[in-house]
Image 1 (spheres, helix red, strand yellow):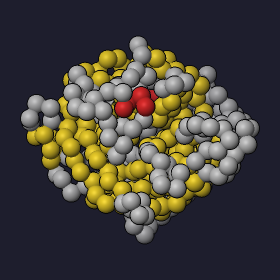
Image 2 (cartoon, rainbow, N blue to C red):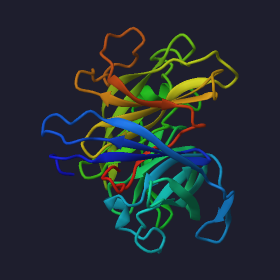
Image 3 (cartoon, helix red, strand yellow):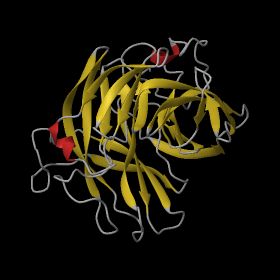
Image 4 (cartoon, rainbow, N blue to C red):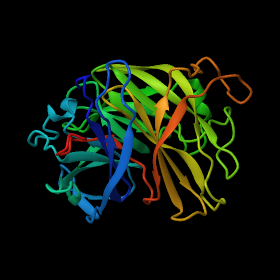
Amino acid sequence: MAVARISHARLCSLRAMLAGLAAALGPVACAQPAPLSVTFLDTAPISATSTLDQHGQSVTITGLSGIVWLGNSTLAMSGHGGGPTSNQNDYFAILDNSNALIRLRVQLNATDDAIEGVAVLGAIRFDQSRDWEAIAPGPRAGHTLLAEEGTPSIAMLNPATGQIAWTAAAPPPFQNRRPNRGFESLTTDPRRGIAWTANEEALTTDGPAASPSTGTVVRLLRWNITPIGATPGPQHAYVVDRMPGPTLLGGSSGLSELVLLDDGRLLALERSLSLTSGLFRSTLYEVGLDSATNVAPIPALTAAPYIPASKRLLWEGSVQNLEGLCQGPRLRDGRT
């Protein structure tokens, strides 16, 4: 993307529905990008409840947890399971606690960029069933990276063959994850060999889970990714907001997704469930890492001194249970 003018980021979020956010960027200087702003655009239901995989077997569409745009150059180079090159409106969505992903086609209105409809084009079964929570472009053409919160780990998938090529486990601090609160997020820049992920809520050695009175501290983990594997790099503490209302059974507040924009800026999607209007509350932040401490050498953050990542609020709202986020195609006015 040209440094003289960064056009914008279009973001899609889903959990049995699809929402659109438009992030607007104006002209920028080489050193200082213009402030990022986000506008909520639209939602549309995914009406199909099942589809067929590459073997003709039925796949129930439930628990959609991550999404990736197939127009990304590293993914559009492959037909994905023998089909044609990816359509500019196509996405993969990963199902948690499964070994399947589905292909979506999101059609936008030519007049106002509203979502006209979401078609399900089929599913792909692959060879390992885990609690997959996020999906992003992989470091090899036609491949995707997946994140799962059980181990936690990241893995590279070849959708054309349905095989996991390799798996990389998280470094030791992440073994202290809370149950069902491992890697919920994943974003990549395959051109630079970078991936980011994070635990959803604080590790037991890093502090408490979120409550109505306090937030929760998670670790942003940067990976170095190659076609043959991944190695963990720096980690930075990130403070998730407290629950915005009184607690209820199953209530929480955590980091549900990350997006790395073309200009290198990182976005974080937080999600909470509490006794507040709409029950679910989502917030989108721009993350600043320039002054943040690399906490990778610190085994426990509870009593350690460190500087967390900074954050700037871009958008907040109540749009059901948003778990997935990705950068998508350009709109008619240059935003993406």
